[in-house]
Length: 471
Image 1: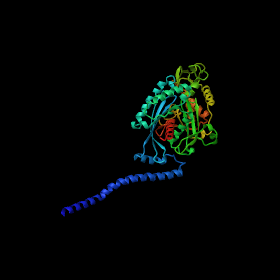
Image 2: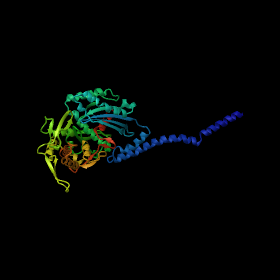
Image 3: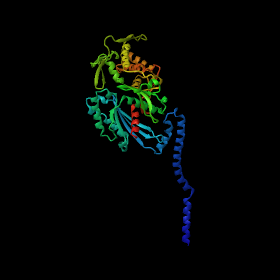
Image 4: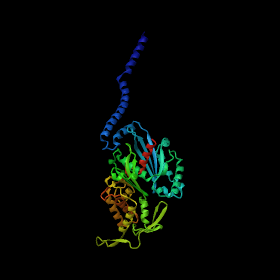
C-alpha cells in the first residue's frame, strides 16, 4: 500500500513538472520564432505588393522584394543559380561567373555576386592558330572553377560568345576558331549546350548591354519611360539601344526588338554599327588613302611619332605623323626665363575631316536618342578616364563637350606615350555628336561598374539564358 502510494505521488510530481511554465515557455519560444518569421514574410510581402500596385510606375521593380529576399536568404529559403559567360571580344577575353537566386516572391532572378577576370589577347588574334586560341580560354575557365563551389559545377551553365572581332573575320576562319573552342570546352565540368559557343549577333549584344545597365540601376519595372539609353563602344563595333517610345523610332521595324524584363518584354530600338568600334575605326582612319601599306602616315598623329606599332586583329601597322607640311603652334614665353617655341600639333581640321567623313558614311542618328538619359561604357569610359575627365574607379558624368575639349587638348599637346589619344578622343566626340546626333551640352554618364558589377552584355545574356532554360 505504501509502495503504490509512492508510485502515484511520483507520477503526479512528474506531471506537475512537465507542465511547469518554464518548460512551456522554452517550447513555445521556438514555435513562436518560426511562425513569426513566416508571418513577417507574408505581411511584408502583402504590404510591398500593395505598394507596388499603387506606385509601380514610379519605383524600381526590385526594391519591393529586396527586404523579403534578404530575410528569405537568411532563413535558407533559396538555392543558388550559377551562370558562366565568356566574352570573347576583339581586344581580349573576359569571364563573368554570376551567382543568382530566385526571388522569394515574384519568381525572378536576383543577382547576388559576380566574378570578373580577363586576359588582353582577343580570340581573333589566333585566327591562324585556332588550337592555341582555344587554350587561351583555359585560364578563364579555371577562374570560374575557383569561384563556384565544386558541388555545384554540374549545375552551372557555361557559354562563350564572340563579338565583333570574329564577325569581322572571314567566315571559314571564324568557324575554325569556334570549332576548336567548342571541342576544348567539352572537357569542362560545367553544363555546355549545343549552342553554347558561337558568335553573338550585334543586336543581341546591344539588347543585353541595355538590360544590364537598367537591371543594375533598378529601372527594369515594366515602364519604358523609366529606362536609360545604353551606348557600348567596343573594339570592333558600337551598339546603341534604348526603349522605343516615339513614332520616329517605332517606324524602323528592322531595329525594334523585344528586350527581356522581370515584368515582360519591352520594345527597344537597337542597332550595332559594325566597324565603328574604337580599334576598327582607328585602323580605317589611320589607313585613309593608303590601304595596302603597312607603313602609314596619318594626319591624326603628331609628327613626333615615327614607326609606332599598331596591331588590330592579325594585322600590324607602323604609324608615323606627317614629316612635311606638319602643323605647329607658337608658344609664347611667359617671362624672361621662357622663350618662344614652335610646338608640333595635329592638324585638327584635316584630321577631323577624315574622321567626320568616315563616321557619316557609316552611321545614321536615331531621332529619339537625344531625349534619353545616356549611359556610355567600355571604350567611352576608358578614354574618358585616361583623359582625366572622370575618376578611373568611380566614373562620373560629363557633358559631350568634355570629349571635344579633351580631343583639342590631346591634339595640341605632343605625347609620345599616347600617340593615338588625339585620334581616339576626336573619333568619340564626332561619333557622339555627328554619328548619333547628340548635342554638346548632353550629359553623358560614364561608368565601368554599377553597384559593384561590371557593365557589359554578359549579365543580360546570362539572365536571358537562365530564364530560357528555366534555370
